[in-house]
Picture 1 (cartoon, helix red, strand yellow):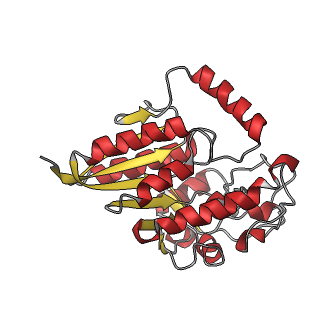
Picture 2 (cartoon, helix red, strand yellow):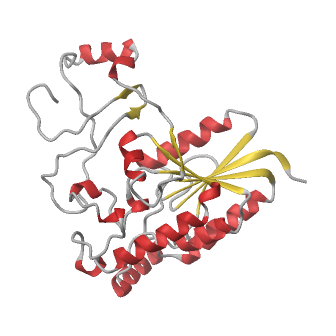
Picture 3 (cartoon, one colour):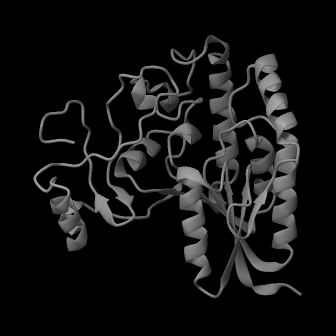
Length: 287
């Protein structure tokens, strides 16, 4: 007999670090409602309760396999290890069999440890599973870029043909990857909700193959004026009350370490919300 509750299954590359902590907080917050239980499936699970690893015990072998696999076929992130993906699916089936309703909450899955085609093919055949997909970056609707604005490239709007950025070996693969993503995302459109905290991201989704999908702006419109007094007092104690504060995680994976341009907009952090605009230059008013 199934439990009259909902199980929320989080899927991410890790259960720690930036997106891992966000996933953990989302799952734990939902579980405060007695009608929800949760489980996390990640590459390196085990850092908190109900977090499971979807990789074999011999991680050294897996890392070596992934590197060799990547070199041998030059295929982009997110389309690698079917064996790991089948372990994820096995856990989803196991948990779904025990609960009345199942939610799958996807976070970052573009790594060398999962095969998104295998995962999404399974989800498309199980229409009773509702899928939430939090977009921490732009990888889900491009041919491979996590941050397309870095190169001012908008080919993803129509297909990412002949990529002008990245490794030469991946230039052909980006077009195929974009086409597969569009097909996979469309296959679960009726059961998919996209989650983002940025109006900037929503505007770009409307220019991508995600146009017309169910999208949630989960933190709404927020800005520094709505920040609690305690945070304003903190700024004063640090001697920065008259300065604008920019919190940014630099993205250097794709090359240019001089990249400063920010794509953050209406971002929400623990302890306060900040509304950032595009920043292309800095002066003494910024820290």
